[in-house]
Image 1 (cartoon, rainbow, N blue to C red):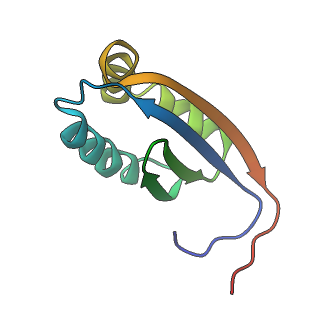
Image 2: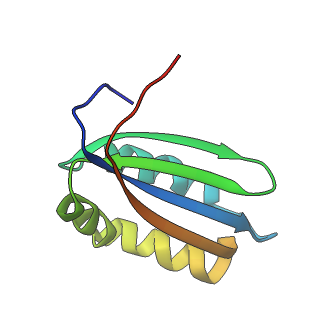
Image 3: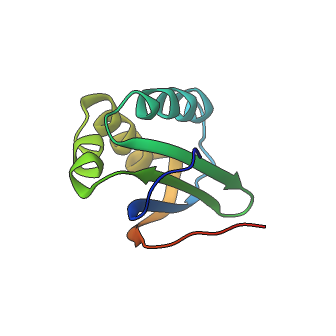
Length: 101
């Protein structure tokens, strides 16, 4: 993620994949590329093991809502619910401060 001024927002998506992941990787890559083109997108970090965690960063709640309602993203969400995930959870957090070593 590029450096940004606080505060900003983090969308934390945790999930457990189902056994049927046909098409998942291609769609995940396409959604990442599409998200990068959206107004207000700041960056993304992701890890997958038994549980997947993807954190995307946004300038505003409005930008997050617009991404959630994007037509291609809506199709991916539907496929996730019906095919790719046993469960998922989304948390939206306001980042007031960050630091790193």
